[in-house]
Amino acid sequence: MTPLRRRMIEDLRIRGLSQCTIDTYVGAVERFARYFDRSPAQLGKEEVRAFQVHLACKRHVSTGTLNVYVSALRFLYTVTLGKDWEMRAIPYARTPRKLPTVLSQDEVLRLFAAIVNLKHRAIVMTTYAGALRASEVASLRIADIDSVRMLIHVRQGKGAKDRLVPLSPALLERLRDYYRAYRPRYWLFPGQDGERHINSRSIHRTLARTATAVLGRSVHPHLLRHSAATHMLEAGVNIRVVQGFLGHRWLSTTDRYSHVSREQITATKSPRST
Image (cartoon, rainbow, N blue to C red; front, side, top):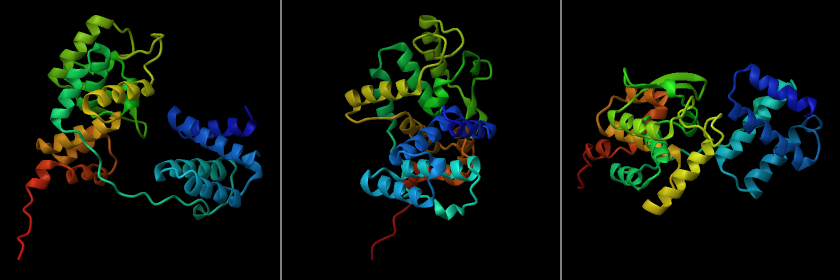
């Protein structure tokens, strides 16, 4: 490990960023350095710009991916290398505001019914019922399931924040069926070695494989989260409550689900044509 790489990792850890974010940022900087075959310490604003052009115009990466590189390079140069650069030297790409894709409740039920494996079904149901991110489901501990208060304790979610989400009776029954069959010891969903929790990529693969066979399209865990949020709004749950369940910092982030809620749309009268 180079001294620069070690220092950047230390700087990221000092700021309390998650291991997933650390790996993402370090990987982005590594690909930047490999593109020029030189240490980032020997590169400057022109090389950063050239790399952004390469990503946007030649590789045609998404704006989300491009902005990950921007965040990583901003951190490297302004924090780890201490460059006195204006942030405009490494601009973010403008992110288009798209409405989230959601599943209908019928599609969600069909997806659940098609999963035979008890562990896989418990994982997918927990993802949806708790409106959780894949990383949050993967890192759940047995102790995080509070069957007395009927709550799930999500620890250190995005932004290093804890939160509580409701535990439905139906999900509790499925989790009990799963527990009796698998007897996990510490992690609710352990990986193959039993010592570490399941990898979030495994959740992605399981869900995508099942959804393609049952629904004819790929489904990722975040789509289940989108669907759960939309279905809560359709059921009349207050948007502030939904915001808390999802762990959103800004209400505007949660409000986008109201734009795909069937109940919200159909409740609005169309203007009469004249």
